[in-house]
Image (cartoon, rainbow, N blue to C red; front, top):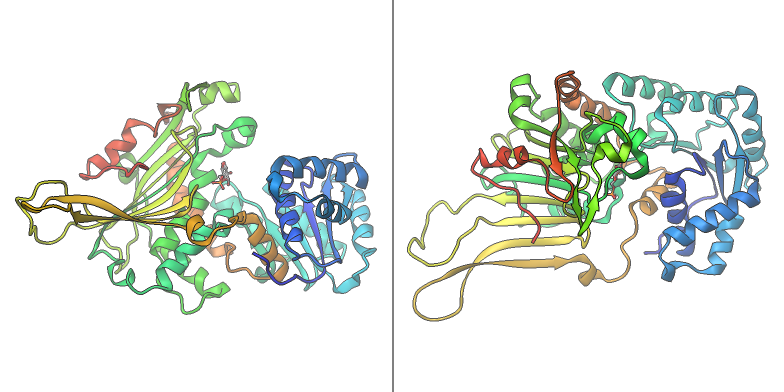
Length: 491
Ligand code: BG6
């Protein structure tokens, strides 16, 4: 898991004391440091409004590492080395006069002007534009600077365009890293490899052989303390516009010529542009919004969404959609997407369901025949399972039985599977944008969800209730049953 060391860098995190920084970014940097990828001249500068000095920040980060890095991965010497890289700058980014403190700290680094500067914006998207402007005015946005934008990039197409314009006035597109952490997951990258480094799937990967595709990202947790953000966002903006559509792109895209930054993103963009537009008629039929009511999760009582956030709301915590990629390869193949909070379990899976054999050769055999299915498990226990039909051993006729070929990546490769952020943060320092979303991709995804957002913003719209700990509202089941299909629940 060791990669080559990256170049000297000042890695600045706006929102440096926030949840994302403490839970994900700093643990990821610790693990990269542990594996020898950070050179001596790699500083991490936390920027926040918190009145803490460097020592106070180090103490905060130390606690976060203990909480969020597995005990067997934590080494006291490396922890001290990482803490020694940390600085904190107290800054209210809206206070123009306060910015000199950040400027001064960045200018006094040992690596000088040649240092790579990363500005990671783990703050509200409304601040992306103003922060970039300040960086520009202070001369900190140079050819060796990169800016990282955490999702959500806006709340709709218009706000995303405004943000992209503002950031684009300062940084060239090749220096803008729009993060979708699903693209950093090992299993998601492996989807590209499975499809394009093997030959056996490609001839089958089209409407001739594929009956339909299901993409599920279910979570067992509720919204927790993110209620104020989530209630303004909802599952469509929080998960579908980015993570689920990115998974769909990787399943449906054409083989890119190379795995490089532009060709992969070009192919994903074509998929987004080929998605069947959601008309009001289709929305009534093919889109389901849900919200969890009180229920039982893992044997314990779980509150309703309204109780969790403290007021009634019409925000959806569950989405199920049927769509189609309208191109030569996929015409007529439904893609069913589903995501929700407080569902029965945490699992992300893509299931490709193949067509029935064209001719029933074993009409009188006992036992079930089922269509072939390829389950691509994104998390947890990433791997792949191919469901097939086999003959049950024994004389006296032919009895068919479903069996599966299982590939578990943990069993095949052993070791720890790195967190998505570890890979993505190093790609930022290296300047590799392949696994980040390009402006046109983000905007195409917003354009596709726009009619759904509008439809669900109507005052009469009500998400359907589902008990916490279940797999969503009944309407999501009906969405497939109507087509003679059913969701492939995990076994
Ligand atoms: C984030 C969403 O982008 O992804 C969260 O904002 C969600 O609401 C999370 O819980 C899921 O990520 P993962 O990696 O745990 O599947």
